[in-house]
Length: 64
Image (cartoon, rainbow, N blue to C red; front, side):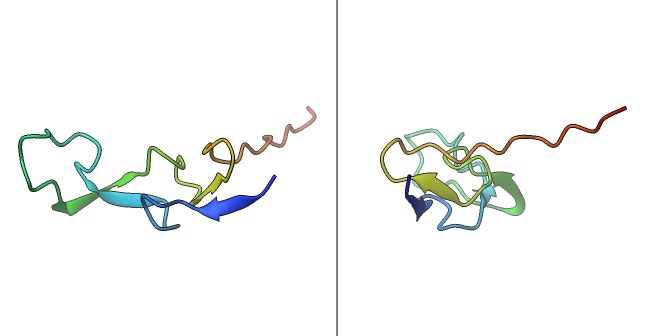
């Protein structure tokens, strides 16, 4: 697998608030007061070059 920087958030993992919920009829979408997690990379900042999906990390399980 090879990875690339997310083209939507440019590797940051967040976008301006309202980026994904803006209506197509309006030319403006940015909210300067809030950020939201990038829905493309799920906040990871990178995606797989082939599938376009973000990496999945296994959660560490603590033994009780």
